[in-house]
Image 1 (spheres, rainbow, N blue to C red):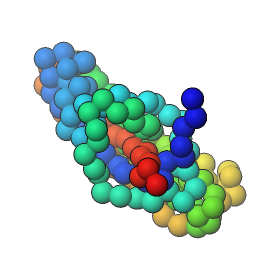
Image 2 (tube, helix red, strand yellow; image 1 turned 60 degrees about the vertical axis):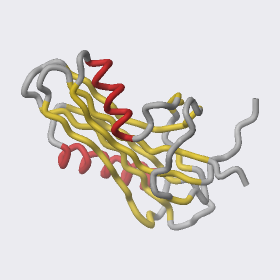
Image 3 (cartoon, rainbow, N blue to C red; image 1 turned 180 degrees about the vertical axis):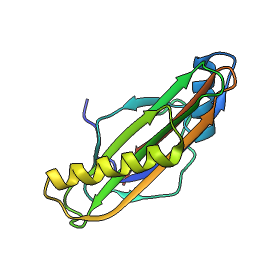
Length: 158
């Protein structure tokens, strides 16, 4: 089976409290707008010439490539956070780099760490960065909590 190179991407995040940790994760996916799709976890490369779009309504059951960070916990009063960052190169013919991270921490700390990972990864590749985008979610667990942050790739079908 041959896959087309994605042409678009968007950032998505969500958090939730649920009946179980799995229910919380499912609800975090719904909050992020990707809950009724089949996520295909991918490694962390943004294809060249991929343009950012606003989140769109994905077809039910679609196979959706996504680089993501997620975390669930059942420890009450614990802050959990997940983030993704993407470093977009100055040269649009080169790929960008997506980094994902989660931990027991507040969102600001997790986003800062994730952004720095993307910057360091691009430095290792000797690629000048045009911009770094990031998104994340945090949640203070009551009983069963979850966080999700992802970069969704999509193809416009042209």
